[in-house]
Image (cartoon, rainbow, N blue to C red; front, top):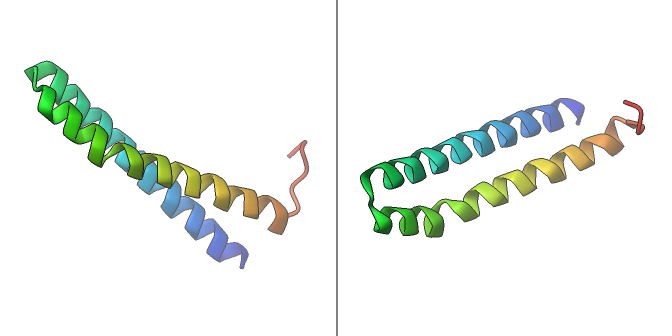
Length: 74
């Protein structure tokens, strides 16, 4: 169970970071090129998956805290 949670956390965190970097890269390209429609597309198609993956990562880490019996000082 602990190994599965570790793998899930690493996978979720990595995917969340990749999505976030992709979102920022698309937004940066839209700002540099002055393409407003690309900004709107990125916001409507990429913002929700980034938030969902960050939330899923937080949920997995919350479950890990109970399984690993972490305390507030850890």
